[in-house]
Image 1 (spheres, rainbow, N blue to C red):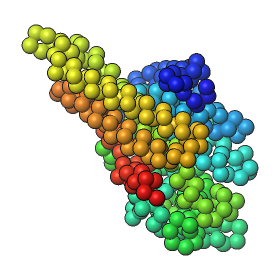
Image 2 (cartoon, rainbow, N blue to C red):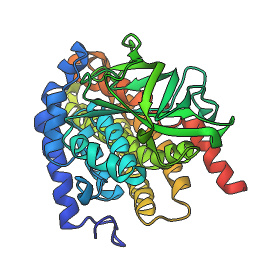
Image 3 (cartoon, rainbow, N blue to C red):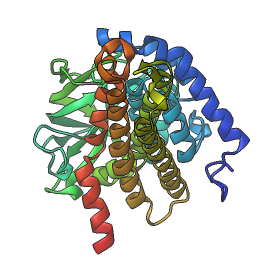
Image 4 (tube, rainbow, N blue to C red):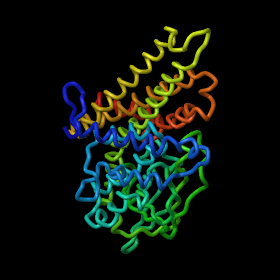
Length: 387
């Protein structure tokens, strides 16, 4: 079916195999180490490159460009499965895939040939640089600017909350949205800035509630010279490029929420079967059974809607952007609630780091904020209804 669902929402044998491969990797290569990475704030580049060897760093990139050539639908299967092992690492892979896909879709032949093969193996890491300290939800108000100077652009400004920033040293690409013209979205262009470029530096590591296994820093441009050939597309197309990339990014981060919540739910089922109170296993109390039933329903509703939105994006449906916004809002909200309920059902043990539930809650909370806050998702949905 290659990205399309049957009328019964069944997966093809190929899709089942894709999901199983990602699930096995998450179980064997991520889950056993996730708590240590979180505690030590360790960014496991080796594990990321192992995932890349399975095609998970360039999922939607065309095979001719060095990618796996899979669909958005395939992608949400992969990210849900990976996030069952560790939502933080799955989420960084989602960002890296968004950068690789953006270059494949909008980059020049030279950009594709030079960078995509190394992005596909994660020899080179990548970061998506849109948000600024003064322009989060109002992304079109960004102030980082790029001035043409001969065969270069000179960038000045700073980007905030950039995942992966500084990791890999010079072996890193930063996809940067900067202002080259008028105020508003039409004056924004997209650039590839290579790690190690003169004038590129980073802020201190941010101390965060979750996502501790990936570094988050400000990315700073101080007369940073970028070759003109690193412009993606044409001047003034950057905002459109950034927004188109975010449709897929929103699906992927929703899938990461779904995988994390599914893992928390699975742990809860096992815990409630083994834990006894008042002479009975917890799962024998009907009041608690009802809570499990609601959690399972939320997970299945989230998965069904996410698959619907992914199929629409693959089909280039006119309503795909709205469906992606709906899915991102619904799934991240519902799955955070499921994870939080899992913590509650674990009682005091859910609050202990060794059980892993509180980590999932911390990791999933930011999914309601990034890739466009859930409030902005409502704005997108409302505009599509009222235009």
